Image 1 (tube, rainbow, N blue to C red):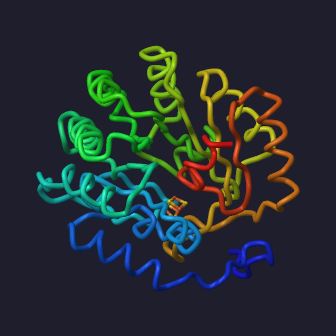
Image 2 (image 1 turned 90 degrees about the vertical axis):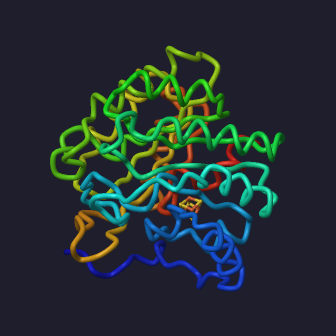
Image 3 (image 1 turned 120 degrees about the vertical axis):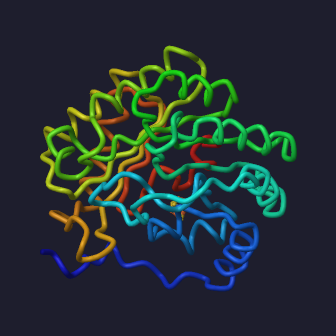
Length: 283
Ligand code: SF4
């Protein structure tokens, strides 16, 4: 087990006042962020720039991914006010770009797709100029659910591949690599103009060749945006880090991804799928 963080993974202490004011608002509206639930190391930086990622459909996930800090188990009832409260939070925070993700809700017949769609609708009603990025679960490959989400016309749709195919059984036992690629492929088939996005976390035991293969697979389904970051174990009970990838290696992966033809690539130790999401599209 690797215990000591290399120098490039040390972050400055975040500005707690800026974090607290945003979290107070999130709590007052009975909302959740993946920033908190997934113990994201970028909270200080993102929150001080006014960026945060809302997590809808509650804060308990029905899957058991071994890398993820989000609580797992049987979720409670949906909060019917959640879509409207997200829209209100976007307004109060004056966000011109917002990322919405969710826990995976395999217990719901359509995986919560209609809540995604309603959330987009409510955000647009109250914040017509705000760009919306959705980071969706695989909806167990249900095309009806995917269609429902796409009908709401977000600006970007992401679905994270997270790791290489060989490690799925160990890292994401209830997910399926090919199904996740299929989700991205379907999005592209339904709407050729929408931007699609995916992310991979390195340091879980994958090889160089497997990383390149995963990039090629994502390019094969016409994914536009790729985010590559370092996996950090949320606790001793989670999958442990197999390797800390150096900044030079991240640079090399970025160059390879760009050569493969991704429109936008973010690659670095602290990169996450929602990290600098709005800046990326402005670049
Ligand atoms: S990278 Fe994403 S999850 Fe992490 S703090 Fe920023 S917005 Fe939140």
